[in-house]
Image (spheres, rainbow, N blue to C red):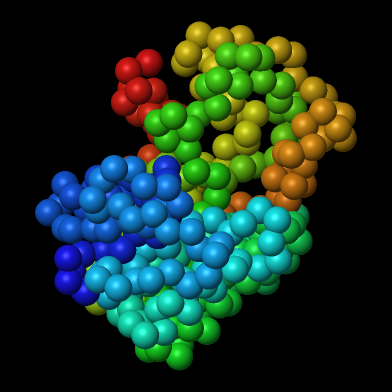
Amino acid sequence: MSEGAGVLIVGLGYVGHALADALQGGGRAWVGLRRHNEGDPRVRAVNLDQGPPDLTDLPTRTVVYLAPPPKDSEGDPRLRHFLQALEACPPERFVYASTTGVYGNQEGAVVTEAAPLFAATPRALRRLDAEQALTDAAERWGTRWAVLRLPGIYGPGRLREEQIRAGLQVPCPEICPPGNRIHRDDIVDVILRLLDDGAPEGFFNVADEEHMSSTAFARAVAQRIGVELPPCIPDLEAYYAAHPGMASFLREQRRIDSTRVRQALQWKPRYDDAISGIEASLHSQGS
């Protein structure tokens, strides 16, 4: 495949595979980079932890970067290695998937792209570093860029069904703050629109408008798969003690506003409420 042909997807995981399928369905070529080969000639095994990759003969005109930073790093060396490799062949368009975690705790306020960034967790700080590295490089190259700030991603196979069937504990509804999420297929739709000629650039929040709490979401899934959850935990600190990994997600309270991307792309999520997204996901799984 000649340079410039198709889309280069970096990070062929949950969203990346869905994007590849959508591109193929639309008759557009793609090449994927991931840590391990899949036996597909369109997928190249690349370890971004080891330094700048060899991008010879790869399409670099249009890049969608979906790879996460290393979990134990300061900043995002993977993205920086990839950007270093692009110096010889800067892209015309670069779409990067970040996180709404960069906003940190907004005390439940409605958050637009103009909100101050209070990133506090290591995960969010790594993403903030990646955003800065990309925008600096894009400005230097004259590359059109888009950073998608994504909340919790769900969809087929990503409903926490295994944990729910195993008796997932949740905080009681009255103490569980509002949440933010987006269906995988809606992310793909936004990316496809951003790859069009003349698409806007900048930072974009991509989220549904329901703000359903994690407790309500788990209960909705449980009801639809015929599972009864154990009694809820009435105290958040007790919940954090039992599930420390959830503390940062629940302590940081915000309501993500995605008006900008809706207006800029003339876009409305297919699943603007969690119930429709849950039911569609279960149906596609044959549940």
